[in-house]
Amino acid sequence: MKKGNRYRRQGNVKILEKALSIKDALFSRLAVRRGAKRLRRIFLLLLLIIPICYGIFRAVTYTIEKAYSLSIEHVDYASSRGFITKEHVMQMLGIEGAINMATLDASGMEAALTSNPCIESAHIRAELPDTLSIEVEERIPIVYVEMENAADRGQRRKLFMDPRGYLFPVMPEYHAKVMELPVWYLNASDVKDFKPGTRIDEELYRPITELVSALNTYQLTQIPSVREIFRSKSWKIVLTLEGGISVIMQVYGIYEQVDRLHMILEHARATGKKISGINVVPVLNPTATFIEPELNKEEDTDDKKDKGKNKPVRRR
Image (tube, rainbow, N blue to C red; front, side, top):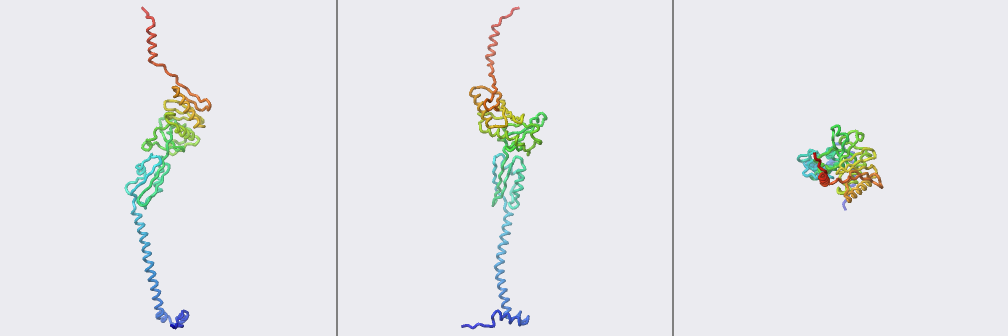
């Protein structure tokens, strides 16, 4: 059995070291061994930490360099209505050539698109590794809007209105598919500033949006397209249909009045009568003004000739 050295207990060693002089304590064999052991531990620890730190540094550097080197190669574009094309959007954003993924300002690009009055909202995001996604929601035009007295002043101008009463410019390059819309003539007191970006009061535009919605439930073969819309009074709407038929309505119960309009037009077609005006405000007895059929001109001319032949000839 190996005997232990009782004088080498840790507590006794420290007591003996304290009794030594500074020189002997620093350069004693035991102190040198202890120092070498500590240096060895520090060295091993550094050997372990340095590669880890270097790996982290290289990974971060690579990620940053890779991000700055990434360029957008593809653009995915989606339009809610198909009015504005991908080419139009690229021109608005001024995108030419490659775009750097790291320096992409998505919020700034969205603001640039929504500054166009024809665009209601836009969403732009970068999708790794090289795709830019653009989603655009255009405003839906339901009617043209024009000031009723603009023609008298020589300042005719048409704007579009969306279902929320928002006015925006007519852009044939965007709206070629929806150019055949009715014109709603505004009175001078209806809007303070007739320009894109203006919102019409809800009490004014609500009956118009309901009217458009109600008419869209019928085919053009059932109810002809509306050409003009007037609101001469707060309660009254006057329509001019294709063919010149005038229709008087009120601002309440739009859907029911459109149903009555369809019923009257169907009756006129079935009986072969032509209508010049309709009043669909009365619930029970809506009225219609019919055009009397014209006499056949050829028969009328023949009758006149026959009458001329039977007249006595005066002699001088």
